[in-house]
Amino acid sequence: MELPVVAPARCELRSVIKFLHAKKIPPIEIHRQLEEVYGEKCMDVKNVRKWCREFTAGRLNVHDEERSGRPSHSDETVRKVEELVLKDRRLTLNELAEKLQDVCSRDSIHSILVNNLQYRKLSARWVPKMLTPEHKVKRVQCAQDFLASFEEEGEEFLDSIVTGDETWAHYYTPETKEQSKQWRHTHWPKVKKFKQEKSAGKVMATVFWDRKGVLLIDFMPRGATINADRYCETLRKLRRAIQNKRRVMLTKGVRLHHDNARPHVANKTTSIITEFGWDVLDHPPYSPDVAPSDFHMFPSLKKHLGGMKFANDEEVHEAVISLLREAAGSWFEEGIQKFVVRMKKLIEVNGDYIEK
Image (cartoon, rainbow, N blue to C red; front, side, top):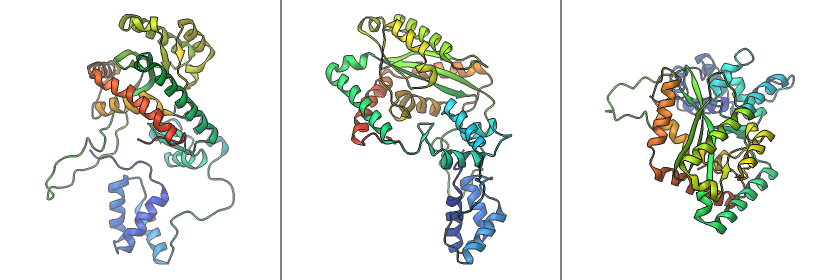
């Protein structure tokens, strides 16, 4: 199935209306085409007619007029949205709307994220649209330190890296647009496009891996939350996994790579990592584009889960474990090699975001 474009900006819809109206296409047909591309709730036909009248009357601007008075979103609403995003940057618009259904609409949440908080989605996470100069300097410094170690130690440096992060695995993950494409005759009737089904449940998985393969897949029990205690327990499991699968790493040294989520940088977590004698690779804030799990592993995992439906947590566990354990060793090697390439790219773009 082909999914609609998610949460289009109002000015984008109006630009489409303006273009189609200039081609003498009637409002009812414009509305049908908008729904076909953007989904049923993008704009009602009444508003399409209104904007057609505006453009007929000579209006050129597709943006809202400047207005005085109280802001469209209260500080308290903005604070609640930001609080949820800071707690879990992977939340989708639909998940945020579900959590805040008594506070504001999905469109309002999108507006707050994009306009008030100046966020955007990168590697399935909400990050600031614009990095500050300080953030860019930090990103470049981390890349320089990483590459200096690589230059000095070569392949042994890459051998020492253990990287990991958390991700949600849903009972139902929609297929990507590419996956849902079908070969069809031009005269066949159009395939009906269904709205994304609401996922009945989801499971949080923490995955650690290195250039040779998966070291640990740890599923969070239903109702539990990720905190420092929970993460430290996962790290103990990771140490046992390394002892069983990569014993030589414990002798040569482990370089742990994870992001700056609160449980990852808590004092308790730092203490147990020190106790293990592991080093930690410095990771800059707001940087999923240089986190191997975010740019390599999780997108591929979600792609392979696309279209699958599960009835319970156990089925999700089995699917995730099966997909990751059956992956070729060369795929993990590719992810770590991309890590090096992206660090070099990070310096080339002076610390800005790496889109691809």
